[in-house]
Amino acid sequence: MKKSNLAFIDLETTGLDPVKHEIIEIGCILARQVGREGQGPAIEVIEEFDLRVKPEHLETSDPESLRINGYNEMDWLFAVDLGSAMKAVSDKTDGAILVAQNVAFDWLFLEKAFVKTSVPNKMDYHRLDLLSMAFAKLYDDEQAQKFSLRALCEHFGVKNAKAHSALSDIRATFEIYKKLLDLA
Image (cartoon, rainbow, N blue to C red; front, side, top):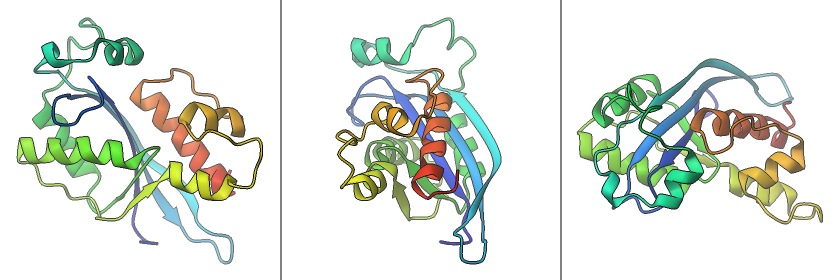
């Protein structure tokens, strides 16, 4: 694990149910861990990317989810199909460990998308959950009562320029990860 790259991934979806709803945006920061004697790893960004994914079944969308993540047809005019998006994710995250704010949510949607598109998931099977890490680290901190991305951004003074857009959310997640590990 110590030599694996980290794939910080955030998804925007048409709702909360991975069986019924779809991925419409994938934001990723791919980072390398660089060992530092007795200090934990330095985290170096290799690449970041953002993919808008053309939804196939807007009729099953949760209107509130679309409102929250700012979906509109004009911004998704040049979106890629799910198969192309998953191929790009598979190729870029080969061997990487998934890191997400709520890894169970993102993983369920990613797993379903890999199966649906028959694209191989080349990520390492390990996953890191920022929410769990924050809960453990901040348990005794009376100021930390909630562990949502918004609450963690407020707690650590991290700006999230465009909340509920995948790339902005994953940039915030990346910064919080570094702060949790005292790397920032």
